[in-house]
Image (cartoon, rainbow, N blue to C red; front, side):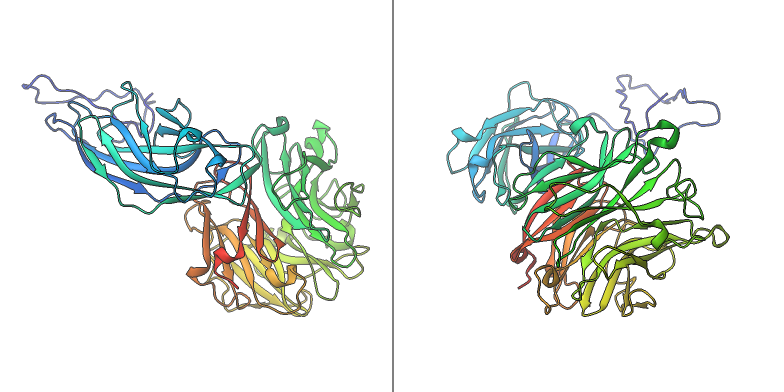
Length: 549
């Protein structure tokens, strides 16, 4: 059976041909769709366009072929095909050339799979000068196809590269086998460094998902996430909560540790637990992680009314009192927080906050009873006694789920919610700990999302311990069409406006799209997100790059 979106070329050597017949081997009653057919005389190949395609993708430390720049070459004709022989470029704006071990050239269309084959050329960076470098292609390099061709400049990033550095590639000229050289006048491709904190296959795990990230009172970074051992799907399944810990601002990370594991009995769908959210009690230093336990099929679709593990999903906590080195046994707060008639109650995911009066708050979500069609609502769960007891708010808005919460002024909480009916975020305000809610002026207007996706929201000044200030950061896929273009946006007026000049693209490639941010210090924000090159990508971003004071 023919593959979808295939291209078929037929050479007509017989000038007397008057008809073409297509034979279809597809199953009965399916057929084939021909989008376009063109019959033209064979012509010598010509280069019609050469340009640098803007590219933003993290240069992951230790990666053998991290994309740095992208060229698009358009051709017509197929006779006497042409090949690329040389690419001239510079690394002039690169912070430190020793961060790169080599430059490699690949051809291919897709971002994630262009390195499946061998590179067509390679250049050892350590042997180049500080000026322009020329990458020469071997005589056996592939010819260009008729139509659109993509050439990628990739870098082998050293394992000891500095995460705060950048790699800048400026493409100056391309020479072809027909002797033609095309001069390029394009802006440099600048890639920020990043760390692949978790990749598929690490520790024999199939998939890592659902990032949470926070900074402890001692300055340690705590990252939490789903450890999806057997597959990429959501609960129920063989899922645990994993943790990574960094004591140097995210430059290096300790090996993963599992901090929540509710069992492995296949009769109960491996008692999976996941969708974590992390919170630091700023007054006591205690770190809390919340997650949902599915005893059997007790997750988004299988959970129901009741309070017992055999009836409904369980809201679980673990705590650490030693900066994340060791963790308690799981603490079940389902009976404290869940109304028996609800079908499901779970945390954010992502992260929670400590309010100025010491109240601990996680964003949360619940499902209505079956009689109300299990309609979901974002809300909050909170503790006024440092985690001894917990309470829950009312629903903020219909058909909202994964949310994040910040305190925009003393006692006033902003809840930024995933909305299942529209490609814009719902933003709600409460002044009475979730007993009532009012829409923020920007709700369903200002912040787009790819209908729908988890996002991150943090208050810069609150995270730095200030009682004043109005700086917010928001991150998500800045798209209405798909989970790509992971972007951080900044507001200096408590989310009233989000100027385009305060927006920073991190990763344009497709991924799962979830993200979580934390302030590392007064000048730096850390972000952990599901990117195009790794299941969990970590980057450090200077606040100055977002044009905020």
